[in-house]
Image 1: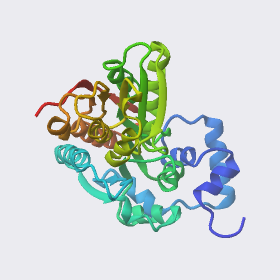
Image 2: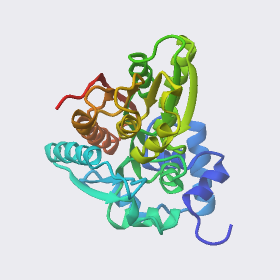
Image 3: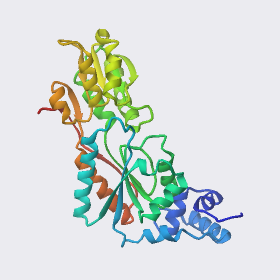
Image 4: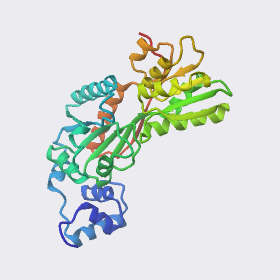
Length: 324
C-alpha cells in the first residue's frame, strides 16, 4: 500500500467498519478478541498511525461539543424550532460545564467529506449534535462511518457505537394525530415533508398504517414542509377530500389558507409551533418539546464523551390544539 494509510484502509483490510477500528484503538468494549487481534495485526502490518489531533480530542479534558444545525431551506426558516433546540442545548451545556459551539451547515457546504472531518478536528471538536440531517448529506454520514467524531442525531436514524439518536416516535405521533380527524372511509390528502427527510419517512409510515387500519382513501403529495407549496397543492383540489393531514404545522397553515371560509375539510398539523395558536388554533397537531430535545441531546453527547455506547432516546409528545 502506497501513500499515507488511513483508518478506512485499515478497516477495509481487516474486513470491519471504521467505527470498529476506532473502538479497538480507543480501548472501547464490545469487540470480540478475534476481531481485535485482526485489526491490531493490520495496524502493525500497515504502520497505521492514528490521527494525533483526533486522539488528543478524545481526552476527557476537552469540554467542547458542537451543535450542528443543518439548514435545509434558507428561504423558509422555522426560527422558533431551531431557537428552542439551541436554548435547550445551551442550558444543559451550562449545567454540565460544557463549552457548546453552534455551527451552521453553510459553514461546510463547499468542503469535501475529508475536509469536513479536518475542519471539526481543527476546531477541537470530537463530539457533535446534528439537527436537521437529511438522507443525502454525505458529509455527516461520512463522519459517522469514519468513527473519530462522536455524533448525536436529532430526528435521524443512523447506527454506530459512537452515534446516538434523540427524537419522538414520529410514526406513532403521526398516526395518533391523524386519527383525531380521520373517520373510516375518509378521502384523505397527506402532505408529506421533504422527500430526503428521515422524519418524512417516519411520519408517512404512520399515516399509511392509519389508512390501512381505518380504510382511508389516501393520496400523498410532497409538500416540502413549505406553507406556500401546501397552499398551492390544496388550492387546486379544495373539496375533493374529507381531511388534509399535514406533516408540519407550516403546511397545515398553508392548507387552511387555501380552503374557502366555512369549509368542512378537516386539517391537522405536526410540531406544535406557537404560530399555530395565532393562525389556526382549531387545528390538531402533534406538539414536540424542542427545548427538552436540545437538553437531552447534550446529555446524550456527554455520555458518549464519557465512553458510553450509542443509544436511541425516545421522548414524549402531545396531540393537542395550540392556543394563544
